[in-house]
Length: 518
Image 1: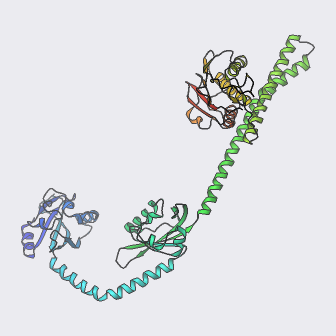
Image 2 (image 1 turned 30 degrees about the vertical axis):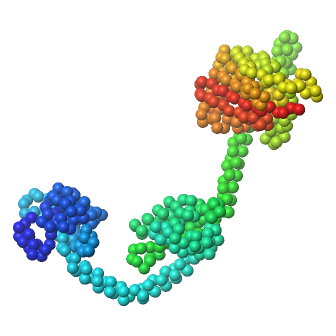
């Protein structure tokens, strides 16, 4: 530093330190450490903000001084309380300092003046004045505070501190939340809010930047009984008797009924959209699945009508067989639609009867082989049969030991699962059908194939009506089979689950409890 400037500062008991534009200390006077927040930190090469945290946040102002845009900046009344019996007060003045040497960047000279005696005297005078005016100020602030609270009252009213502690409530708030005044006063606002984040952020944003608080803030609250209620809050800050310290008024209105109506409307719209999608899939399926057999029937009848006298008897039989096959296909489709409609309308009935499961499944497998599986190997495995029970004189020898299931519904379940396994598996592949009756309580049917599998994104909707996975390609199908299977399993009180991976096959497991036939 300039020696002349040092001589001028010493008699005035003014200390100093010099920082560059990075706020790194370049030079200090002898007693600067006395004023540092942490003694020993105010040394050349250190960041001045570590020892004088008052510089934090005013960096832009200090840079403006270095660049010559501002003449200087003063911070008054800085306090240090290292000695509880005698606090230390000082002022800081920041000015631009230019070195006498050329080409040396300008720096910042920060002067420190000890104002302890002055501040102690000032505080004493302020305290005396405050004591003299305390009653008048308190009465005026109290009146102003109460007036603002009264004017702000609407439905439920709550007043909280900056930290969210409840100070005041009105009767409407007690009715809305089910708490008495004594139960809420002094408690945190989070007691009645399931999510306090938005309100807490609003308070902090106002305190830090004076940004306007959000209006009509919809928050899920809870009352004393634990019931969730929707409340629409508006919030206003109130300046307390202490400068810079705010309380917050919340006016809340119960909008639970309105929210429930909105939820119901959204639910109805979602159901309507889902219904439209189901209808769209239904009409698409009808158009596709009826199109081919109808074309076959029309073509065959056209040939028979126009060329019946010219074709051979064998050819006539061939075309008639095409008509019969197509008609059966359409009839089966109509039966599936009627069955599903009956199930969804609750009209599908459950008629349990004694069933020889091993014989039933064996015959069903042979039927599937003839109808669908000529190019596949269906391996039927019967793990364990139901153990015989004590003979009942009222029952026949043939049925007394057999479990009771609905054979019609069971046929729908197994036929759909086995035919799907055949349809979606490559030619000459193996399909495994396993029957397991581990006890006298339920039968487990396991059907495993090595087919195309079910994509993960389609698995959640697999049992919906008219829904087909995206990887089925041109393989014919209606999207009704698995929906029918699910309905039939539910009527038995059973369970169905599956595991699948695209390209690696699918495994379905159906568990059906035995109906206690008597």
